[in-house]
Image 1 (cartoon, rainbow, N blue to C red):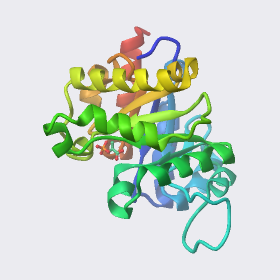
Image 2: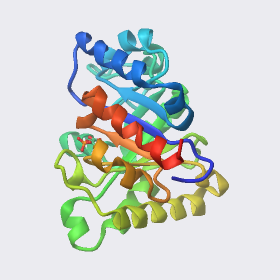
Image 3: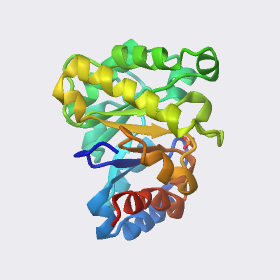
Length: 254
Ligand code: PEP
């Protein structure tokens, strides 16, 4: 938690889900009660194909996308621009997810351009960073992540920027760093952001992602400078996704 920042719990559905899964979104909307709405923002990032249809029926849960092209339009077969995603109803766009970095060879320079494209389109970027297992074991986790944060962000960033720290080795594995390791990483990111962006950097939401479940959410979300979660697998199950969000009822004492 960071005093004064409303946390965000964002689901990343990855390459999962069909039209019929709109029922899951309805379940999440239904369970997103006023007491929960008061303490945490919720978003779901389904595949491109589902955004417009889901946005049409989503009363309270925001919609987002999982990637975008750097250009606004043009001859880029198979790609989707941030402007198109906004047009479809996306308010957030995830950029630099480790699966994009590994499956598509995306690097910090491209992610920086994508971040700029998302901002230009009027959406909020969720910029993902995180170290590999080797980098953690060799003691370089913090310097690697600081480097990714520095190189993936343009100089001109909006106040609502979101950064997600997702250790690659924790994604989809059931492994989770200790609360102390998360605290150290988030403190390092906050210090670097404040150094570079001044008071604006104090207000960015810093999410933790990697095997977040209802059973570990309260401990992880209570860590200083952790302002929410980016959730993969558990976001496909409405009860689990809401269970993670409900950690904030406990943390805030409501
Ligand atoms: C993710 O892919 O962003 C993620 C955090 O996945 P999971 O929650 O399944 O580890």
